[in-house]
Amino acid sequence: MKQITEISDDIKQKFNITLENGGTFELKLEYIEQQAGWFYSITYGDLIINGSRLVTSVNILRAYKNRLPFGISIIADDGSEPIFLDDFSSERVKFYLLTESEVTDFETEYYNG
Image 1 (cartoon, rainbow, N blue to C red):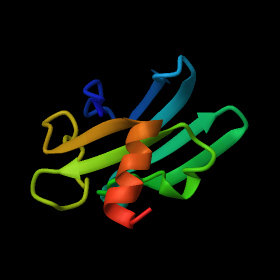
Image 2: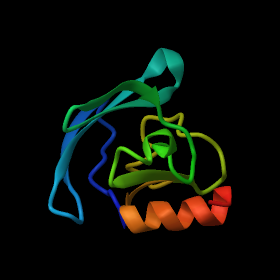
Image 3: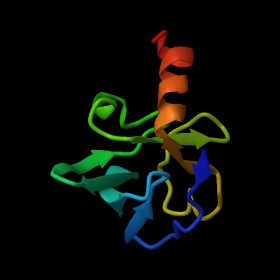
């Protein structure tokens, strides 16, 4: 797992993330105050995921496990959801990029295969 530590407390952010296999994907994050939460959009090849809410999860991209060679794990120190603007910059909530093998391992460990 690789922690993404570049997330700041800016309300809109955009990252190009390089994967273990050399590929890349675009990650957009947006904090929406009225919703008290963070939302993400991902573009990987022809797959586009728009405006999904970030929640604590072993792999928020589990629904796409057969289409993506990576996953994203969101872990909060206190077990709650990422609801504050400074959650990532303060590291109360951590954002991890998972490799394809880590996704497989987590699938077996947490979801029984």
